[in-house]
Length: 240
Ligand SMILES: Nc1ncnc2c1ncn2[C@@H]1O[C@H](COP(=O)(O)OP(=O)(O)OP(=O)(O)O)[C@@H](O)[C@H]1O
Image 1: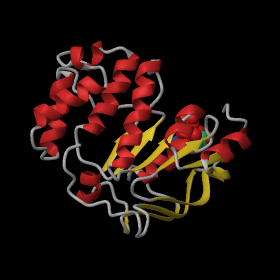
Image 2 (image 1 turned 90 degrees about the vertical axis):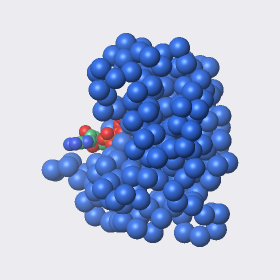
Image 3 (image 1 turned 45 degrees about the vertical axis):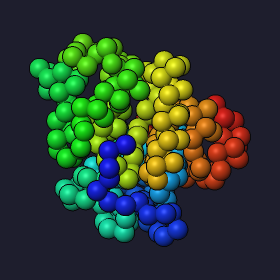
Image 4 (image 1 turned 180 degrees about the vertical axis):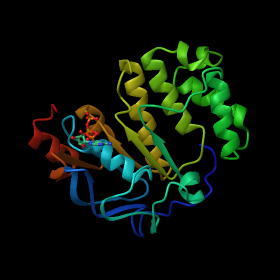
């Protein structure tokens, strides 16, 4: 992966991501009740829950794209602020949209990201990430010409051509075919081996079993189960 600007540590110190008493209210709606969550470097936590259970809300806070109504969200010991250059440099977020320029190709988008993050040997990284995501034949296409699964792979590629110590992903398995899903699992295991802290929301129990060290189940914005994947997923019936 492109060299990181910060060091993730060896996992022995405080967790890279720490949420303490974090809640989020939208008007009258309590999307998240106060919760604590820690994701150490080199580990993966998977959020599980039905539509509307609060997963994306939690991910937005963890990625610095939203602020908690109460509580504190810390990245590497500092309050997460999207405008903090360190957060921008070290936290990569894979959401369900990307700010696309309709006239720029897939490769040009990825180039812009590598320039912003000062990545050495950018073209080499871009080629590798495109090939790994099975987008090699689409480098010169415009985003509007991608299928929904290819667009999902492109969103992932945008996070992978840049350095990162925390990777936040919102249902990255959506719209991927079986081979791309298999590669996604292998990718996330590789991220952990590289010392990256991974936080993802998923509806796919198999993915959580394969990559997560911890599963947190949410229901109506509350944590209803938390622990090792086998225990929590069995408790949930393993088929949410
Ligand atoms: N910007 C917003 N304004 C008002 N309510 C919101 C907003 N964002 C989310 N909500 C509400 O907060 C609750 C949690 O939504 P959230 O998107 O976090 O759920 P989710 O678990 O990610 O769902 P899904 O699996 O469908 O993506 C929902 O009831 C939703 O309607």
